[in-house]
Length: 318
Image (cartoon, rainbow, N blue to C red; front, side):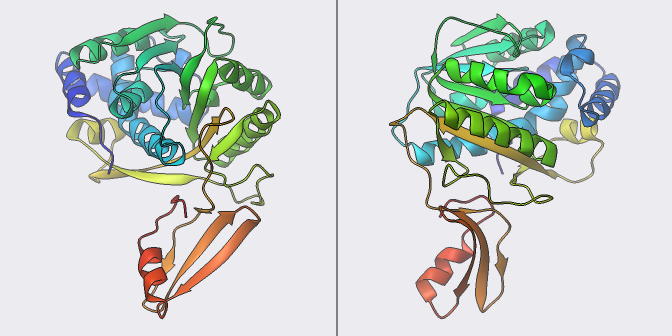
């Protein structure tokens, strides 16, 4: 499981102690329904309580997904150490916290159109000891900062843009990127298809796909199938209250894309794109490879390969 850093959890809890949990839970429920209808955050984040309700309900899952993608970036480009990071559509700074865990010395620039999110990001970054932060109020759909960053992240933000604005936003993110661009979106068919459109455009602009794809060809999956992954995170009592849940964990489904400038990293030889099927005789793997989709069956009689295959999980590179 990938959980929030203790400093971040403590900072959010201290802020929530000053507000009624019942009111925060009501805000979280309204927000959740709004997002299911693909509404924009600007329509529901109107005050400090709304921003805090969002942090309590959505920050843990977003953090877990971004952390999983950052792990993949490190695996694909082990020597990559950006000095500057742009967190575009930052919200309360969730992706920045995940980045800070990996690239502790990087200067973080958080950009969002919502002042309440930025105010909360400032409060929890200062309280948590993450002082290397710059805050910018600007819109993801039309910002121009006049400088480039070693790493650009955009997590669960492009989903709020309309289809006509999507490719222009992707191009803008790429213009501001000097090293690697990391995009994380909800693991839904609609968002995956939009991610594919951005992938095509970024390849046209000279980007090299590092993950999850092991190639730059068209995606071999055929609708209604789609490429997505899952990460498990534990739930605190506050998180369960905001989500109205009873389980002590949550499985977050997400789709993602890591694109880099030439010379940075290399894609994996293949990737497991579904949960492996295992019995005492074999492990069956659905793999996306350089030549497209493959079904691989590893038999128990090949002891070394069988032992390795049993350790593979959905989303792993091979």
